[in-house]
Length: 354
Image (tube, rainbow, N blue to C red):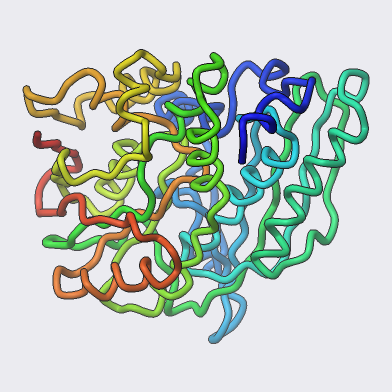
């Protein structure tokens, strides 16, 4: 990636959208209100994972050997390059299958475009980017749906398979488990800097490299009995998705700020004020369930709440399995994966130490 690519496309996709990437997500508290009345309906016994714990995907048991994973994700542009936008959106959508411990098998495209404002070749590049990621994941785009919309929207419905006994949810953590994060944080900060013209070519390459890396370790982690819970960190930030883990398992989490990895340049940009509006909305949504050490700065708090687009896997595993889990990440190209904290018995909340 070079600086020429940043300016080669005269159409700025991000100018068409009020928000980008997973920063477009409805705030956690608002989403809970919307879904409050939908949780009482009867469900078939084959539905292994539904909406009860805000997990990454639905899982439906087909037989003794197979369960179907179904998920969907789409958003407005987080970058101006149409091919990269398609790649990021597709990678993000497929991640939910890996986060359940599954293997993706096919996808359907969801496409909403302002046909009167975007040239057809630009829309074609978005679709091409998504197709390239699906090809890397070994799956076809078998269909989809398109509409004429005010803002550009792209994403996928993704289906996958997993053995019913190997499903990894966000609610299975146990007291004493260690927390491991698969990708460094900071995508929201980089996207904010990009939108304001403050991200150089090196920073853009860092952002694209992270957001287009498929979370393939999830397939192998599913086969480790010592891995008790799995999710991916996306629009609600690290604290938000960790809170879902805590609430699902009724445990307390303790994070070590010094051990949390960040993408190159992120802390400098965050200190300079390149923070997304979704970061503040996320913090407000956590309520009183997060406590920060007095030494944690405003910049660090913003990084903990930073919305991640196509973020990393968050793993809860037995302490004895840490080396094996990190080995899985390393073997699949996730050298920055790191131990960031632990889970203990207690109320469902997160504490962050300096």
